[in-house]
Length: 207
Image 1 (cartoon, rainbow, N blue to C red):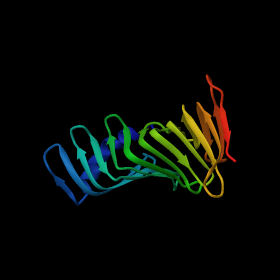
Image 2 (cartoon, rainbow, N blue to C red):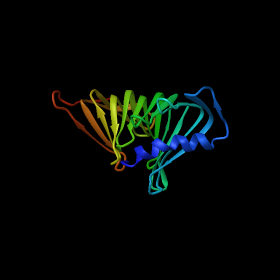
Image 3 (tube, rainbow, N blue to C red):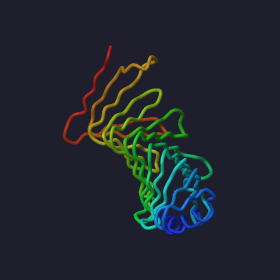
Image 4 (cartoon, rainbow, N blue to C red):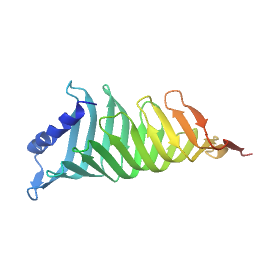
C-alpha cells in the first residue's frame, strides 16, 4: 500500500489521456462516460478496480467523483470484496476512497456474507476499511447491527457500541439475541465474540 500514492498521482493522466469518451467541460473538470479503471501496485499486482457509468475528474483537486460505482478489491488474483454504493469520491491528494449511500459490501470467500452501511471509508495506504451509519452484517445464520464497523485484512469485522446480535432459525426468524458494547466476527471461521467494558453483555432467548 505504501507505493499506492505515487501510482495514483500519475494514474489520472494515463486514464484521462486514453479514455475515448472524455468530454472536456473546462480546464478544471472533465466528464468521463463508462469509467473502467484498474489500480496496480508498482510490482504489477492488481489492488482494486472501479467501474462507473458516469464520473467527473477534477484536475485542480485531483479528485474523481463517481456515480453508482462498483469496486472490486483483490487478494492476489482473486476478488475478495465487491462494493456498491450510490456515489463515491477518490481523493488523490488525501489518498482516501469514500463511498456514500446504500453501501453494500459482499464477501466472496464465504457465501452470502453482506455488510450494509451508509458510508465506507478507505485510506488507500492502509488495509482496514471503516463503515459508518446503520451497519448491518447478515448471512444465512445471523444478523449483526451497530453504528460503526471496521473490516481488517485478517477478515475480522469489529462492530462498535452499541451492538445487537441475532441468530436466525430456518424461517429467518430471530431466536436468540445478544446486546453488547463490541463484537468481533471472523469471516474465515464464521465465529463471533463479544466484549463490554462498562456494561454487562445481555442475552435474550425467544421461544
